[in-house]
Image (cartoon, rainbow, N blue to C red; front, side, top):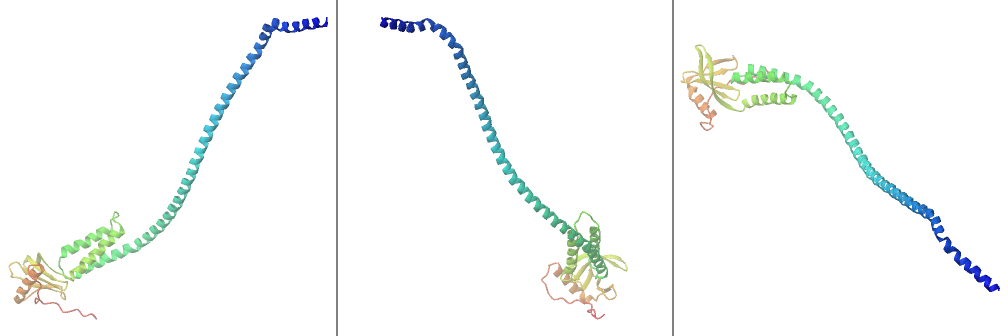
Length: 258
């Protein structure tokens, strides 16, 4: 009798769930839906996290790039600072040089003026060869000193060159044609300059012959015996004859004590 009761109870236990399965499935649907929603929410959250991580990586890469650029700029700025320091030092040196140049110019300009005045007096008192050319050179120097578009160095060089030219006259001979003022008016003659100690002339027809007397500062006539020698000197000066000894009258040497 006990065995029958147990069997019935077991059958009742195993048969009961079969009748309630649909109801249980319906009860599980909300749970499954909420689970899917959680999964979808987790997926969305993970995507947002991934997007944020990607943004962070981009920002980190951008930061590192900027950091390198900043390092490069700092090096560049340091170079600029050193260049600026060098430029400031060069400016100071240049300013000092300009001050020195200005001081030198203040000293050189009066010196040049004295040199030009001395050259003018020298030409006026010297043997009167190439008078127009030499006077024009002095006049040109006087105008040059007044020009503001010419450097002091160039002015001084030109004045120095003029002195060099005058010095060269003392070491050369020269023949040139020019006009000579005589008692009967101007005559065209050939001049022979021997250094700066002798100046002679002969007319084109050979009728006039003379020399410059430095003591009385006048032209004086030479004896006809010197005509051949003056003519030979003219040929030598024009390189039409080989250098040779010629006989010409020269003024007596000046007394150094006078």
